[in-house]
Structures are given as structure tokens and as C-alpha cells.
Amino acid sequence: MPTVSDKDRKMTETTGEPAGDGSPYRGDQGRLARLAVFWALAILLFYGCVSLYRTLSPAFGGALAKPFTASLKSIPVLGLPLNPALLITAVVLVGAWYGLYRWQQTPKVADLLIETEAELRKVTWPTIPEAVNSSIVVIVCVIFLMAFLAGADWLLGRWTTLILTGGNG
Image (cartoon, rainbow, N blue to C red; front, side, top):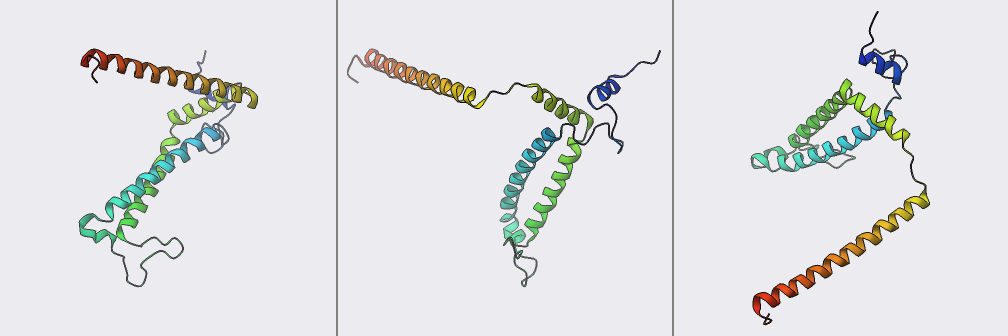
């Protein structure tokens, strides 16, 4: 009797059939989770590359900040200086985005994101009034706890001052 592997069972349960491009996933499967993760990490990578650019520009005595040509000192629409630091940063950014895309397509990561989105679709989300009421309860509790801790801190500070200084502080 032939056995069905976990991968085949998962593919049958979640997708029905493999996609035509050789991928075991349909294009819309886990799409929102994959998009959210990709763009969140892509923004972090962009921020990291901006930091890299700012680090490279003054490096090597400012040699990486000098424009390639005197006639074209900056990119016309963007106003960014066209220099080696920008070129290095752009190559790193494009490579990092490509690596992120490829990493996200690995079966383990893709399965995690697909399963995450499937679980989120099962969640019963609160209505707006329920969310507002719950938020009010949380805010009131936080304010009460803040007042209690501030009062306890003040009272314990006064007692400690009284004990350590004999009331002269």
C-alpha cells in the first residue's frame, strides 16, 4: 500500500494540486502574509542601506563621496549624488532584496507564512465597539497601575529617607 508523505498530504490539504510552474504552492496561497513579510523586511533593508551609504560617504577620506563625473554630479530627478558610495549601496540593496525574495520562496519559510495566514483567517476578529471598549479598559488599568506604582514609589522613598537620615533629609 503506497504511503503519502507529509509534504504530499500538506499539499493536498492546503492547495489541492501543485501549481503549473513546478512550485507546490498556488500563487494566491499565503499571498498577504508573504507580501507583508517581504515589504517589512525590504523596508528594514532599505534603512540599513541608507545607513551604509552614510557610513561609506565619508570613508577613505571622502573618496567614495566624490562624483564620477563633473558634468553629472547628481541623479536628475532624485537629486542623489552619483558617486561610488551610492553605486555600492544600490548593488547591496538590490542583492539583499533578491536574497530576501529567494529566502522567502524556500519551502520551510513559505509553508510557515502560508500556515500563518491560514490561521489568521480562522481568527474571530473583534468588532469596532468591542475593540474600543477593550482599549478603554486597558488604558484605565494602565493609568491605575501607574498611579499606584508612583504613589508606592513616593511613599517608600519618603520612608527610606526618614529611616536613613533620621528625618533630616
